[in-house]
Length: 176
Image (cartoon, helix red, strand yellow):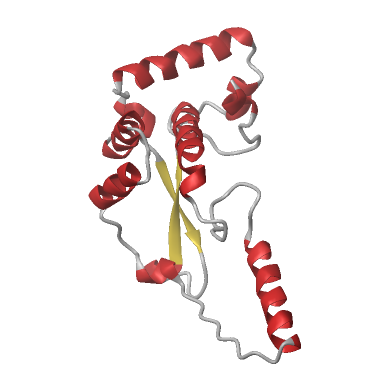
């Protein structure tokens, strides 16, 4: 399983205390067992609730360490859950790749904010050379959308062509 080979080393484990390295380098028997587990969950669309239990660790962002809002939480999740979630993600990405605009850079493999900066510099240079006025607007959507209506996300997934099975699997992972 390619997903297992891509697991990152030296990462904290979730509640089960199983490190990615154990699964990654555990050999064929471990691979086959994990594959069977994920296949059963995939086919039945039922996941053990233990898989989605996480350990939340507060990470200081900035400012006073005594103020709650200066922290963000990260969740340490089960490695098996991460494998399942990554399998779902790869399938969704394969289905929607053609629906995503060329200029969308965030959260796309092989694309980054550096690409956007380069494109902006090119536009700026072209505008300068041709004596054109250029207007730029930057929007921090993170601040604008701190909460998401998950039902609308599922509906949007359907509209852009994500198969129903994958939507149900996403729903399953988020409902536990």
